Length: 251
Ligand SMILES: *[C@@H]1O[C@H](CO)[C@@H](O)[C@H](O)[C@H]1NC(C)=O
Ligand SMILES: *[C@@H]1O[C@H](CO)[C@@H](O)[C@H](O)[C@H]1NC(C)=O
Image 1 (cartoon, rainbow, N blue to C red):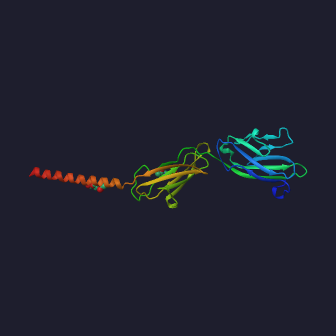
Image 2: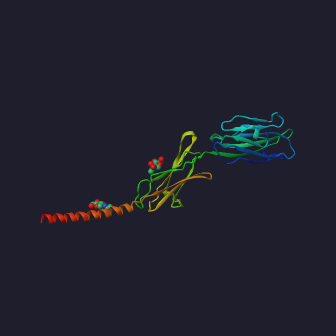
Image 3: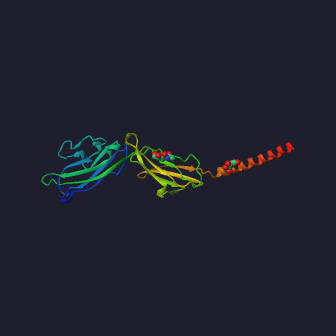
């Protein structure tokens, strides 16, 4: 039907520019750079996952036409033969975007390029840590989890102990991401590192280079135990004094 880039002699699609990661609700301009090298433009068509959503044909009046697709809202005023502007991206906007350029007769050469666009949603909410509230004995393994806020795609999680990233895999428990409402996901990562005094643990959630984090302190029990044994000693002394007084009263 059409001749692909590899065998085309005049028409070249120089590049397609589609951001790899955009936030839900944002707008985006996708550009298709081509070089007709003397040929005449017949059409530029844009597809998401093989479904056409925009075409530009200079012979037609008007030359632009948009097809409705879920998650693809074309702003015709900001679109042209070389770019297409999409408004109000949703999680359904993610997919492989392709532009296909064709030349007029007699050559009908055609060339195309494609690339993937991911849509993310990452609320300001920090991740949540559970299991740190209770005191731990020194060396006792922690039993804490970190869960991201509802987001998409599922955020990557990392644990840090006193500023050092945990790389010891036997300390980490990867739980499968859970599906939440509206197609969002919650990631959970467990930490089973041995407790130590003055321990600060931080959980970092990331999507691309966007990051949310939460830091908590772990209370170890050694100080409490020392207090308790001091209390025991005081108790023993008091009991002894009472016994002595008792003995004196009897005699
Ligand atoms: C950590 O998460 C897993 C999976 O959701 C759960 O089974 C476990 O009880 C959690 N542990 C704590 C300390 O909350
Ligand atoms: C305090 O004394 C009791 C018995 O008198 C003992 O069972 C307990 O272990 C002691 N507590 C500590 C922290 O030494």
